[in-house]
Structures are given as structure tokens and as C-alpha cells.
Image 1 (tube, rainbow, N blue to C red):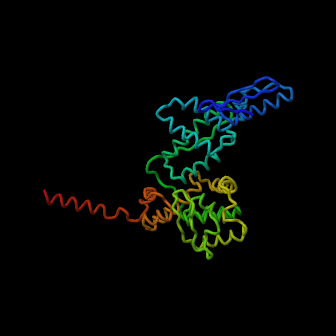
Image 2: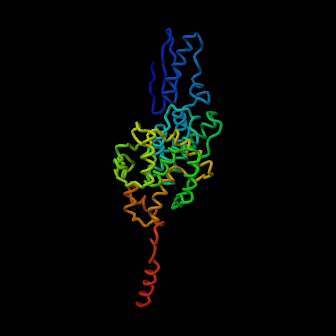
Length: 346
């Protein structure tokens, strides 16, 4: 087997069979390898070599994500000199996240929702999210035109600037937990309660180990996180109860939520609950916003909220400042004093 890279985004498959040379060029290495394997098998059966263009297109439905991105790069982005570097970075990141060999037809709204939540976990602003989703939309639009997907998913557009942070009220929390309980999703309930009262990111909860929880289940230490700032959190009574329940459910598991993959049962059950309630603006990350918002509303100072939430920058924490009671109290009085002072001088 011989697949050789030609240039930055071109791959050439070339092989000999009974003295004859066969070759074809593709946008993706996996497509080149796949064509060579199919071609060799066809020749051994006494059949003709498959059309390279049909393989490259994946027959429409078989188009791989990596091949699609390489094609879009050539058609749309490679000549955009001012933004080529940034687009190249986004291309590599998108390939890595979804997998270059993943069929485009498997990248639907559910997987994109996971991607959005991961971007939010990384601290991406609404503006950054919109740029990344615009990138994905361009690629999916090309896939739709090629027939690789019947219809591209509708992607959200986030309001940029100082928009309202979505968090759950006490009444909404009661509704959420009530539906989860009625549906019998006990493990999801434990996850949601823990997320609400710790403010942990979904990735932090899924990777939590029992060894990180003290023997009395009074505290949990978060070692691996986006900000690379380990922290120890004190647990509420209801979180301790949920963790004890999870321990009885999965005594051999390395952690309370180790069996819940973000793209598996967690996502499936969460979406069933949210769809049943009818919320279109609540995601798993909303639980983290709820915790931070409640701390701010209760008057906890920004520095302690930053430490509790594991924010790398205080700027992230300051999004919740407007929720603090009386944070602008006295400002008008200061201005009044200023006016009086000016009148006295004049």
C-alpha cells in the first residue's frame, strides 16, 4: 500500500497490480487508502477499478468529515489570506473533535450540541461560538450541496455582548427534578443535583473519582479542569445523599458518574427531559450558571465565587456581578454629592 501526501491537502494512492500501475488523488488520506483497498479487491475479482471521483465524493452519503473539510478549504478558504491561518486552526480543531474519518451524515444537531457545550466549558464567548458555528455551517452547506446529507441541521446564533445569563429559578429546578424522578432517571437526578450544588463542569463530574471524595462525603477535590486550578468543594447535604446513592448503585465504578458518557445515556436522558418540559434555552451547562448565579444573588463575593467555580479569570466571574444585591447601591448618592460639590465651587 502506498499513499503519499502531495502538498498540504492532497493525497495520492498508487499501487502496481500484475505489471500495471494504478493511481488516484484525493483530498483525504483515509479516502485514498479506502480507494486503494477497494481497487485491489476489485482487480482480484476480475472487475474494473472503482471510479476515484465516486470514492472521493463518498457516493454522496459516504463522505467523510475530513474529506469534506479539505474540500471546503480548497473551495472557500484557502485564498482568504487575511484569515487563512485562523481558518486552518479551526479546520484542524474540527477534524480532531468530530474525527476525520467520521461520516458527515453522523454529525447531526445532537453531536453539535455536545460540541457547543464543550466550547462553553472552555470559556468561549457568544461571539467566538458564533464564529465556530459559522465555520461548521459553511462545511455542512457544502455537504448538503454534494448530497452527503439530505438537509443540514439548523445551528443556533448567540446574542453577542452582555446578554442575560440563563439560570434556573427554584421553581424551574423543582420542575426539572420532578420530571427526572417521574421518568425514573435516578442517575441523571444525582448528576443534576451535584451539578447544581457544586457548579462543576460536566467534564469534571464525569471524570470525578471516588478517591477524590473524602470518606464522610463532605468534600470533593477537583484535580483536572479547564483552568488547571485544582479546588476542593464542600458538599451540601443533598449532594452527599445522592453520592451515597450512586455508591450503592455502582460500588465497583471508579467514580459516581464514570459510567455516564456525555454523548451517551447522559445526553439521551437529558434531552428527553428537556423536550418533555418544552425548554429550548436550557442545556447541561445551565446547571453551572445556576450555581454561580445563586452564589452571587446570595451575596457571596466575586473572589470566592471565582475560586468555587474554578474560573481562570475574574472577568468570567464578573458576568454575575449584576445579580449581587445592592452592588450599585450608593452610586446615585455619590453622584448627588458630586453635583453639590460642583455647585459649591461655582
